[in-house]
Length: 350
Image (tube, rainbow, N blue to C red; front, side):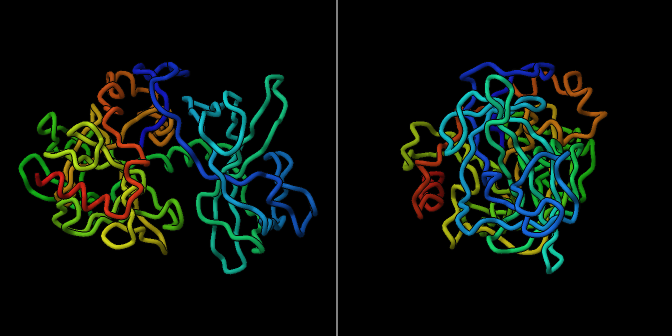
């Protein structure tokens, strides 16, 4: 997804205010995760340099996940945005490190540490952003602390992705599984006809909680087959009649906003292979018959690109971000109804 403020020129490190809405991530306060065994016994979560490998942490039974609104930049620090449950609007938010925990059953859980600072540069609050669900009263042994991987993991979590096996429509009309596509293959796009793929990314992560893919069953939104995408993937819908009340015909709708437990649901369990496709411009392509977006490179997702491509992105992808159409995105409040997917299907049929 692309909810961050972003200048059309990739070389900029800060963004114009008011261009795009902030986006939210789910976090816990650092004080809600404490060491229950190890060198730092009794201490709450802290910075990378103060953490000790093999310390065992436990999440407080009183801990509740909360929304932290942020405005990402090309690199840390970010800024805290409006509308969240925590933090002071406008304060700097530093991405400190990526932590790797191991549970007693051998399961691996990753989490990002975010640090809010005040106007004087002093620490105001520390937050933990889990990349998989964490449970109270469960032991989490700290087995890894990485500063270098933090921004890339944050970017991967923000990328819109297709899952292994998803059939993509090529320029010829043929269908090909996303994992079999190659750079240079020409894909059919809604607005610009056949377009060559510039880059294909892939990563694997646990299919749990907010990061589990969303399954859109065949027939829903006129899908030819089941479609499994990342939760923030935006789908394109053309309304012949505005039954949703969005005030326009063309819509971009996030997959997670359509979850109803029946025709659209989260697919949790195990691991999921996510694939990203990058074109010269942000495109609407066709996956299992549904119009869906390609990867949008912005200040949140740029770090997911390989270093050699990220450094050349201004030259390779001129004004890529300007091809996004954020005004088409439907806000979640309009979709907070169990029949939202059904309404959109009827709207597109006339």
